Length: 165
Image (cartoon, helix red, strand yellow):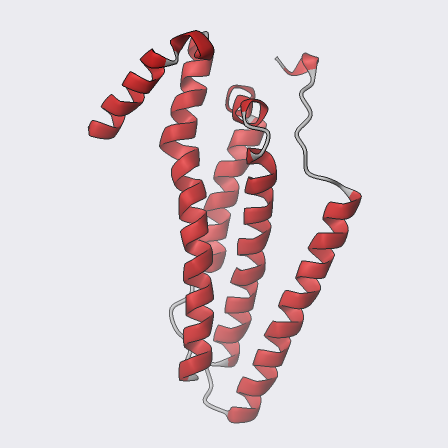
């Protein structure tokens, strides 16, 4: 309740910069949905990393759910990019689109590495653990290099077209 009250106070304070009602919905989407998802994405990245480190230390698989969380985060970012009213978040904050795309890619790479490690550590066998760890390191390295090549060929910026609205 306090968060909603703070949001309405912020909307009232910045009413001249916000404009029509669709912009109000965009601001509400940013503060109520997109900002918590971005902060949650940073937290999920750290949790997946700690989960990987814990698996490597203990030698046993732990609960892993990085792919599901990546799907939820990707869905929110997809809705933000596909719906024209919500797309205004990317127009007003040009750093938001590259942040959301790179965060989704990073979480996906780490979630796949977590899945590989969990599958390999499900059986107690030292050679299998070593091979799985090597495969995970190769997967992270190759995926990061492919991401760099892709981002070099297709830089992340959000173009505003006049025909969109």
